[in-house]
Structure formats: C-alpha cells, structure tokens
Length: 198
Ligand code: HEC
Ligand code: HEC
Ligand code: HEC
Image 1 (cartoon, rainbow, N blue to C red):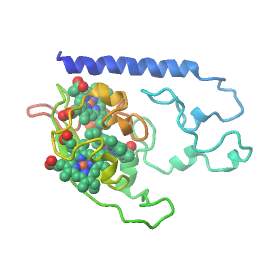
Image 2 (spheres, rainbow, N blue to C red):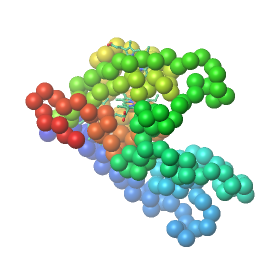
Image 3 (cartoon, protein in one colour):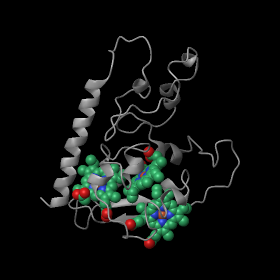
Image 4 (cartoon, rainbow, N blue to C red):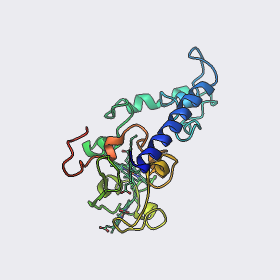
C-alpha cells in the first residue's frame, strides 16, 4: 500500500476514536427530559472535532420548545445515506434557495460551472471539485486566494489534512457533508481502467 493511503487510514482510525470518545463523554442518558445541544441534530457530533455542534436554539430558554425543531425542518429535505439532510441535492431539486444576504437582497451570487478533477488520490477514484455546487452559497473569496490558489493542480493536499479540518476540511469536517463518511461524494471519477467503486 502506498504511503499516503496509509496516512489516510491512520487518520480514519483517529477520527473513529474521536467519535467513540465523544459518544462516551456525552452527559446524561436517553431518559433526560430537557433537550441537549448535541441532540438537536439527532446524533453525536462528527469528527475530527468532538465539540457539540452549535445549538440552533438556546436550550436554556424556556420558550425553546415552542420553536420549530431542526428535525422537523429537515424532514422536508432529501436525506443522504446517513439520514442527514443532503444539502447539495436539496439545492439541485430546488427544495431550498439560499439567499445572497441574510436579510434578503444584496449582490446576486456569482454562478460558476467549472469542474476540476484532482488526481492525487492514490488508489481511490479521482476527486471532482464542482464549482457549481459551491458558488450558490459561497463567494469566490471564501476559498480564493487564502485557502486555494485559483489554478488547477496548484494546491497540494491530502486526506489526513482534510480530516483534520484543513483544505476542503475547513468545511467538509465542520459545516458541509463530512469527509469522514461519504468518500463517494468527492471521489466520484473512476481512474482510467478502474471499475466504478460506488
Ligand atoms: C469552496 C472553495 C471554492 C470556491 C468558493 C471557489 N473556488 Fe475556484 N477553485 C477551488 C479549487 C479547490 C480549485 C482547484 C485548485 C487545485 O486544483 O489545486 C479552484 C480553481 C479555480 C480556478 C482555476 C481553474 C483552472 O483550470 O486552473 C479558477 C479560475 C477559479 N477557481 C475561479 C473561481 C471563481 C471565479 C469563484 C467564484 C465564483 C470560485 N473559484 C469559487 C475552490 C473554490
Ligand atoms: C468554504 C467551505 C467549503 C470548502 C473549503 C469546500 N467545500 Fe465542498 N461544499 C461546501 C458546501 C457548503 C457544500 C454544499 C453543502 C453540502 O452538500 O453539504 C459543498 C458541496 C460539495 C460537493 C457536492 C457534493 C454533491 O453531492 O453534489 C462536493 C463534491 C464538494 N463539496 C467537494 C469539495 C472538495 C473536493 C473540496 C476541496 C478541494 C471542497 N469541497 C471544499 C463547502 C465547502
Ligand atoms: C470533501 C471531499 C473528500 C471526501 C469526502 C474524501 N476525500 Fe479523499 N481526497 C480529497 C482530496 C481533495 C484529495 C487530494 C486530491 C489531490 O490533491 O489531487 C484526496 C485524496 C485522498 C487520498 C490520496 C492522498 C492521501 O491522503 O492518501 C486517499 C487515499 C483518499 N483521499 C481517501 C479517502 C477516503 C477513504 C475517504 C472517505 C473516508 C475520502 N478520501 C473522502 C477529497 C475528499
């Protein structure tokens, strides 16, 4: 096995240890009457961070239960294979229409339909980076030039960094779908001569 692949698997093992560790560290039990911050999304927080996700509502506020719970809002969205909202699919289906600004109005978002295929993937299928899936909710400046130089092949990165929250992991280990569980959403292009993996 090549060295980079081994590094990715080591990172995977560390990540899994984090999930188990955080599951054990949760306070209280299933019988708790009060909603706990980490329960709002119906699951333990995802690695590599073992912090609870920021609560959408303030669970200490006595009126919190009168507000719509995230699970109810999410029930109208297409689920991914893990039962979490598949935001990219929701966008494609038109189930959501992200605003350019919180209050509405604002500069229209800049559309860009440009796929970049990234080939430094060891035995894994290549990674397709789709600008079209990112531009509706991010400005170019979220990634260029601080995070990625806008030039195909100019940014070295590997899975260990991504799972640690760097490069793609700035979002795909935090707010967007997790690189930990859904390899196929990025590694979607079979290498030449490779049978489809998924
Ligand atoms: C989510 C992060 C992200 C956002 C947002 C983003 N890009 Fe990119 N962009 C990338 C990545 C990653 C690459 C490929 C870098 C690599 O291959 O090393 C790239 C590459 C590029 C390239 C180089 C293409 C080539 O063939 O060399 C251009 C031009 C570009 N982006 C323009 C834009 C513009 C314009 C916007 C806003 C509409 C934008 N990008 C938004 C991540 C982003
Ligand atoms: C600044 C935040 C950010 C960064 C950095 C970022 N992404 Fe994303 N990405 C998102 C968001 C937000 C979505 C849409 C929400 C979701 O699907 O969870 C998304 C969606 C995607 C999708 C669409 C998946 C689908 O099912 O259609 C792919 C593929 C993807 N990202 C790959 C990458 C890769 C590869 C990188 C690094 C080169 C990267 N992203 C970097 C925020 C980011
Ligand atoms: C958010 C997108 C994304 C997801 C999800 C993702 N990867 Fe990657 N992966 C990348 C990118 C980007 C690279 C670097 C590609 C490049 O630089 O050409 C990479 C590279 C790799 C490499 C080769 C480099 C290295 O670090 O060894 C392996 C192996 C790998 N990924 C395995 C996986 C596995 C296994 C999963 C699922 C547990 C996974 N990846 C999920 C984006 C992703």
